[in-house]
Image 1: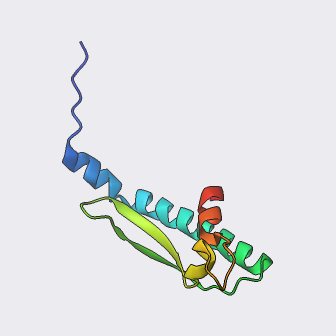
Image 2 (image 1 turned 135 degrees about the vertical axis):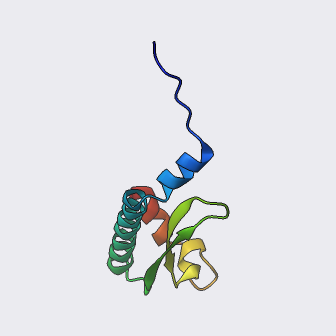
Length: 92
């Protein structure tokens, strides 16, 4: 006879906060950031990048890569649209 397994919301939240999970999120964030730095350098786009680690509203952990050159992501009258962060995330 098999036992019924119940997975509670608290169990899922604890698993999401586990150091292995948050560590892997950091690894992926760093990979995306390195790729973005490489793309920016190869295309001559001046840009500084940084990571912020935290939680989404509620409880889910996240790592976000930020860049200081917003115009290149969406384009403007002064800058072509390059999508450095978008492309790095897609490839990451």
